[in-house]
Every structure is written in C-alpha cells, then in structure tokens.
Image: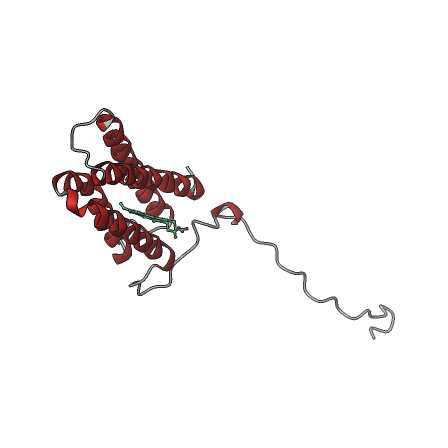
Length: 160
Ligand code: HEM
C-alpha cells in the first residue's frame, strides 16, 4: 500500500476519533450520562478511529523509513493518541470538564498535525522520500542526464 493511501487512512481514522469525541462531549455538556441509546455506536466509532489511525500512522512511519529509530515527534503523537483514547472515560466521569476537554482536544489535534508536518526534535533532516515515491524512478534504473555539449565541427581532411 502506498504512502498516500496510508495518509488518507490515517486522517480518516483521526476524523472518526474527533467526531465521536465531539459528540460525546456535547451529549455530556447537555446533561447526558453514560447510559444513552447510541452509546455503543459512538464508542465503536471512537474505537475504530483509534485503531485505523494507529495502524495507518505506523504504515506512514514505515513508508518514511522511521521504523528503525522512532523519532521523538512520533512518540509524542502516540502520547496524544493515547490521551484521545482515554478522553471519553474522563468526559463521562467528570461532566464539568467536558467543555474544556473539547477545546483541549482541538489543541491536541492541532499539535499532532504540527508534529507531523514540522517534525521537530530531529537531528537529521526530515525525508520526504515516501511522499515522492510515485515520482521516483524504480530502484536500479539510471536517471537520464543532459547530453554533453556538442564538439565543434572539424574537417576530417585537415583535422581543424
Ligand atoms: C499512533 C499515533 C500516531 C502516529 C504513529 C502518527 C504518525 C504520523 C505520520 C508518520 C505522519 C506522516 C508525516 C509525513 O507525511 O511526513 C502523520 C501525519 C499526520 N498525522 Fe499522525 N500519527 C499519530 C497520531 C495522530 C493524531 C492523534 C493526530 C491528530 C489528532 C494526527 C494527525 C496527523 C495529521 C493531520 C497528519 C498529516 C500531516 C501532513 O499533511 O503531512 N496523527 N502521522
């Protein structure tokens, strides 16, 4: 599967997570409790989103060649992922925190995007090889280069 495919999958997984957290937060802000009609639905959307974003996140790390030595920014993203995974329990348990948690979720998601885009704390320059995979020539092929400049024409008889 391609880098591009993993990225779309990663983002779709994140959308699932954020959408379900928003739904749970609004429900609780409006006085809802842990028991409600579509609780299983929203819990499974949250869970599927976590799973998909996690698997695709690691697919992306592999495509970018970061799996051998996980960069700090990716570990920070995993911490954010864990926090987003635990938030429904906190929202149900502490309804008074639902609104601040909703806002914090936005900040965390923005920070996760920042980490992926800017890749801070790296002591080697970030590679975009995976992103350009589809445009790169296959391994083992020679890239055509510009032909050398033409020699000035000479007269074979005089050699000049
Ligand atoms: C297990 C946790 C996670 C891992 C391992 C992970 C890993 C990655 C990787 C490797 C990329 C690609 C970076 C690139 O193309 O250069 C990426 C992109 C992205 N991630 Fe994550 N991520 C995780 C969690 C999250 C979370 C929790 C969010 C947001 C709530 C998030 C939001 C994004 C976004 C918006 C992008 C696209 C950035 C771009 O345009 O390149 N990720 N992630």
